[in-house]
Amino acid sequence: MYKKFGIEDKLIELSQKAELELTQIFQNMENICEYNSLKVLEAFQNNNISDIHFNSTTGYGYGDIGRDTIEKVFAQVFKAEDALVRNQFISGTHALTVTLFGLLRPGDFLLSINGKPYDTLDEVIGIKENSSSLNSFGIEYEQVDLLNDDFDYKKIEEVLNNKKIKVIAIQRSRGYELRKSIDIYKLEKVIRFIKNINENVIIMVDNCYCEFVTKKEPIELGADIAVGSLIKNAGGGIAPNGAYVVGKKKLIELVAERLTAPGLGKEVGPSLGINKSILQGIFYAPNVVLNSLKTATLASYILENLGYKVSPKYSEERADIVQLIEFGEREKLIKYCQGIQKASPIDSKSIPEPWDMPGYTNQVIMAAGTFTQGSSIELSCDAPIRPPFIAFMQGALTYQYGKIGVLKAIQNISEE
Image (spheres, rainbow, N blue to C red):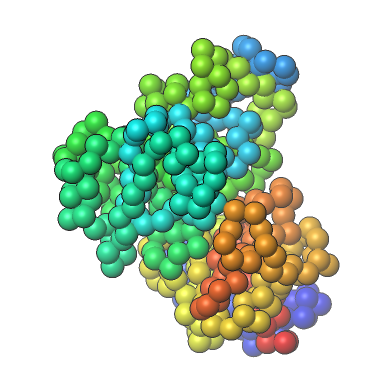
């Protein structure tokens, strides 16, 4: 069967060697998955989930029992006071935008402490000029860059002591940056540090790509509010769209009133038949995240053995599902992404090419033969076309499909 996919014996043998070497690492990941599965199951049972919660509402969405109970499940899973889980969120970027506009007012100050956020927030914040940005509403912004892949505590303290900061944003995953993703240990340490200086500052965590990778989530570590997408980890590859916001009840109310309208908040928002998919998604999420992590770890091992620079290395502890592969050459990067597409269940005959994608400063290539458009928890690989030509791979609904995708992508480079 591998030969039918054009994958050479030597590459299959290398993958088998990798799996033997990775046995203990995979077992540790299985243990985390088991813990998180217990956590999710407990939330389902405590909230007495039944088929009544699969029902749908239209129009205003008043009295949607399923929607409201889903938010209780998410709040329990993420150890939060409240949650907003809605299909009205178009993406993680949209949920972050609504959250920032919900929390900030003209004259307020937003501080990012991991350097510049993900590219799609440039126009939201006003880093790139836009007449609808936070900056256009008189909201100031400053960023503190990371220092050797850790927070610059001295600079953070200096800014907090000299400026009246309303919201501090922390993006855990690296986006298209080369720095390491922020693990729970660094996150907990910096949250404690900030709260000791100013306990009233709101700490908002972009949790995209990080859910269920470890046993703890940002709210447990002291964050006030956290945001994530349902077409990434938390949706388990089943939720067709949407996002979640979890955190303190008073903050969730502000975000809800920005998503809908003041005075309406969480009371409106029709589920339009999505409730069952969201519930199934978070139910499967711990295991799907496990498959993504195993796929990324396998890729890291094989590609490092083939001479490529990778991050994280296969033996390093992971904070998210993203795997970086540095190709050093434009064509190798493109061929790897195209190989991922060739191994996909959807649009396998399509050939992704770099293009000018809205919200990005460089051309971007995106390989994603996914059941849900733009789903990053399904096996996908994307990259900005700029030196040193690094691919950002994530996802895999099952480890077996992920493994096939990685091998096909590597084979696609060697064929060229």
